[in-house]
Picture 1 (cartoon, one colour):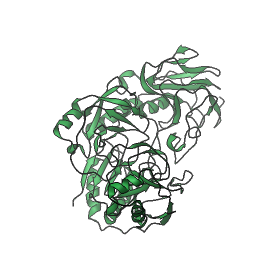
Picture 2: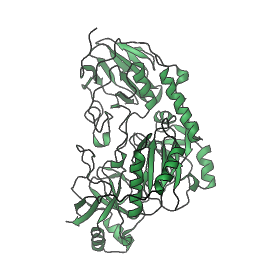
Picture 3: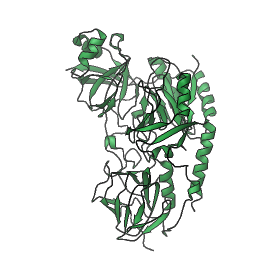
Picture 4: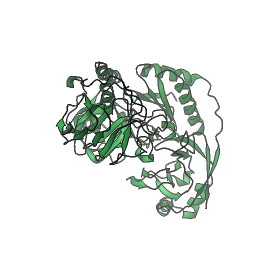
Length: 209
Length: 317
């Protein structure tokens, strides 16, 4: 699939390499972001699941120069990134949406818990707020659309699911995912650089407690 | 002439105002760990205030929302107030905006009432000292980092200088009103069609560019939820992508969100517009209940507009 590129305002652009949650595709995005960040005029490149958002300095590069660079970089053989660290995260599965989510999925709550805590998830990206890791892919039996009306307040430590994704809210924030549990392990590490326990490419296993 | 030593107290906060915090031009480069750039909402106004007192554009100053503080000068200093007009006064007498103003020790900078705008900026020659986090002094309230102990100012706080003030202190530098962004009520925000603009149906596209939107009460440094015509999108739910200030997201409810300085760094709602750098200062001065429209711009037009604005700063001698 050829890449698509669109501007986001006058100093950022979005490169889309695909539209699936896929480890290989995500690795290509991270590799492309890392390569773009080495170019002059690129301030920051953020790899999403299947996209790269490039923040650039229009005085030193341009939309079209980055588009050409992307096309060229994508022709190169992708590097294989190092496999990330494995984190074990203890979870109390008593979230306010556990019963409703199980109902919507046609599962018993215990099955939802078992299915959620079985896989080793990949950190596809960290974003939204400091330390929020987008983990996946979620088993197909657990996939629900986001809540129609997001919550204005989700407590820190909430373990949540949405679509093919799962994650832990590191801070009290608004949020539109379904809250199925909580953990006491801090995700946001204010005194560290980077200030996030989980980094792109890391792996995560949830343990019911 | 005597020089001011670093970390020397310069201003005491007698009244903090509703929401006053230290901001600089932010901490870009940490979005991949979920950290937004933060910094001044109206970047033009902060940069101009800094130039007017002889500072580099990115020195830390105060961002004051809605009313503004009362500040007592603990030593002679040069300040400039820019952005919103809250009627700045020195010892009770009004002083001009967008102008370098000398404060003698014991004089007070106060604000006697909001005439226009949402956020004013106060720069002090030498720049303000603060808690540095990930390379910036910008206050980020969500995690209580940067600025003055990661929080908004409170009565009794003492602000210190980050470094020696450039000497001599030259009062009276001024930025002409005709060189400012076109601030005003109901601004037309220049915006580039975003990655998912083409997913809007025809009627929604027309509404987006023709209809006014109102800033809702849900408007803060993270973003403004807008109210206006219901916008309809086609296509499947998206995977989360990296975001930037100025991105306009369209959630499932059909009411757009304009992302601002403390924006979420990733999100899964379609991005229908990117408000340009030159237009963000206009947005930063909007209050809940006020209106805006969107005006279509190309990337290169928007970049030229920003360069023109920035060139205005170079006219501050």
